[in-house]
Length: 201
Length: 242
Image 1 (tube, rainbow over the protein chains, first blue to last red):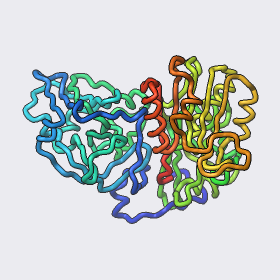
Image 2 (tube, each protein chain N blue to C red):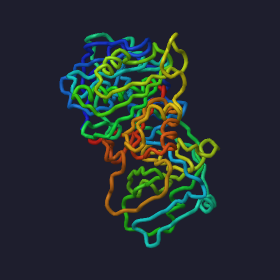
Image 3 (tube, each protein chain N blue to C red):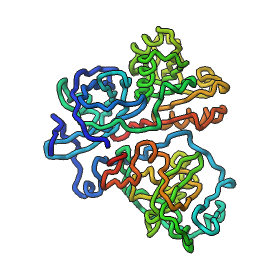
Image 4 (spheres, rainbow over the protein chains, first blue to last red):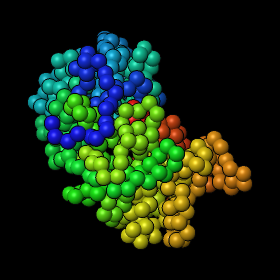
């Protein structure tokens, strides 16, 4: 331990929550909003979700079709690179394992792309194996547009910018393609437990 | 690679009863763009650490680095930075961070800056940068505060406007207005934006920063009014944690 901030004591928290809190983070109980531009408003009858790229036949679901897929309810801690973490957030959505079922691909990487133009990249293996969902309910209520509704990605093991709001689809790619924040100074992978916030972390 | 650095508090400027600017001497500052932020890390004697992000308030041309911090009464870090910290104390930080909510003077589009509360901080870095390099880019700031006493950088904004180099500032006070107040006295709405914003045909570059409800509302209204969503950059300052 090097530098000590003279006079700083900090608010103490119990050990149980400390062990769930990645380095540099603090706990919030409300739900802050972060995005880089205006919130898109997508009518459900115009919404669709696609899987494209390195796939023989791209897949596409309308809202109605998508809502017929089997859903899961998950409770996860989420961690934003702007330092807040929120524990035990409850979501309803479709697992990426369900969405990618039967897909044969040579791709090792993915790009999530959104209504409004946002993109973020991930290795394919971070979307499969019960690690990622397309969610449309938060705490049992339809997801509000400012939090990414009608549907957003939930990839809770990484910083939350890796969970695209207003998700429109997943592109399967052979070569990694850094997305919006990844080309604006933020880490390419974003593991909160290794504090991978920025380029070079 | 953004490494942690120690800055020395050279000056503490009380901007409003709740807001202060920390002016820091940074021996190895790599330079920054107007609109970027820094991460501040504080460490207690027992090794407990936590971090917060703060927008940079100073222009890139300023040899000292300033951040402006709003003291949140139930916060963990802001009451320390604005209250405990003394001149000569060291502050650990790294940056600059963020490549999106930044203004580069080479972009000659007219600027519309819309700020609420301490959301004015990164916009002030842009305004100071513009003044420091003697840019005449037409620039309008629409700035929402609760009361006159809550206006951050008020005297400096007045002074910069008086240079008559293309900067104008419109204030709105949402909770309390002094007698004889000539500015706006309500939350920012469509009519106000219609009066303050550059006409659409001028294709302004727009930066909006403030609490989430203000940013959501202003950005949505601007899109409804027909401004290009791709030219509207937003950043939110929730009074969260702090």
